[in-house]
Amino acid sequence: MNKKIMLLTAAVFLTMILSACGNNSSSEANGKVTLTLFSTMSNSGERKAFEEVIREFEKEHQQIRIDANFPGNSYEDMIRVKMGANDMPDLFDTHGWAKLRYSEYVADLKEMDWVKQLDPSLDQILKDQDGKVYAYPLNQAKDGLSFNANLLKEYGIEVPRTLDELKSALLTVKEKSKGDVVPLWIPGGDNSNIAQVFDELATPLLITDQKHQYGKELENGSFDWSLYTPLAQFMKDLKDQDLLNKDVLTAKLSQAPELMAQNKIAFTFVGGSLGPEATELNSSIKVGTMPVPAIHKGDEQSWIGGERFTVAAWKGSKHLKEAKQFIDFLAKPENAKKIAEGTSSETALKQVKAKNYYSTFYDQYEQVKIEPYFDRKYLPSGMWAVMATTGQELLAGSITPEQLSKKMEEEYKRLKKQ
Image (cartoon, rainbow, N blue to C red; front, side, top):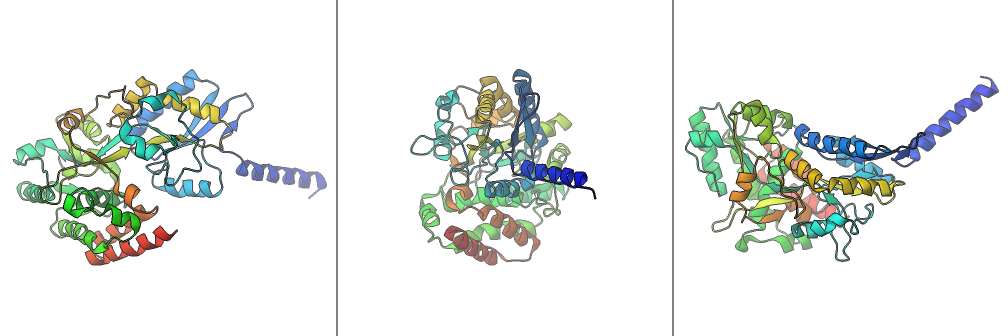
């Protein structure tokens, strides 16, 4: 190899290294700025609304381009790598961990105009005692169960209010459909959807009932994990009695709209755009939503929620000004409304009212209290993955309910020390 070629090769190699180590955002030769954005949105219907607003922003701000990424199940792993390298995306979703996990990476948004309109119920999640605002919430979650309203009417099933009533409803679906309808459908091909079920039901089991409140014990590390076993036993019983889909360990989230449209699902913990997508496939379908059922006698139902999707700005971004411009654009009333309706959720801004597919049901249950996600408030970071894998193992029959609780205890103690 001659000397000129060697020098050229070395220069190219050095350029590649410097490019790899640089900020995720970039300034192009023509003066345009590209902002990288990472989101946990995994549903195509939800992404559609968000991407439409992104395109409108790019039309209005022609010198700024948004490089939107939706890595799905890989999101947390990718972000952890970027956190370790201190090379975060310009804009990213804090997915419930704005303060606990991302606090040192996010820019303070408290001076932005939309903050005055933020729903106070989100203050404990997105603000600290000094008033710092960690992220902009694209919408608010009210998680519970979705159900096929037509099938429940056909089978004479009242919308369940308690876990016992839910179990009875599932048995009725199995009997009256002669096995043609899945009583409770879980897309466990991604085990985070199994974790979702455990996370939602842990709240009525361990938090909301006055005689069964263990929040302090969970927070200080003294919780008796045998109290978690009834939840694992409930899920095992559902599997043993064929009240779950037979492919619970392989079913994909993307299958939900079509199966609901075909009247193959009675209940599911899948929410979001499931209703509108299923109805688009079959106009006669009506998907309802309900709060999480109460477990203990005398307790009330509850929504599980907080912010669903957010956009935070990386404080180390070279284009923080442009990143905040994008967040301001998202917070315009017409855009906040479009995203909330596109994700079948409520807005996080007091002045903006969204009319979405589930509005009738949200109005019906407007007095029901919203409880924060169990893992986000009471468990150390990393426990979501533990709930996912232990739940998967339970449904696969490789561990018992008691063993599940023991594994949860071991990982809880280990992660709490970190």
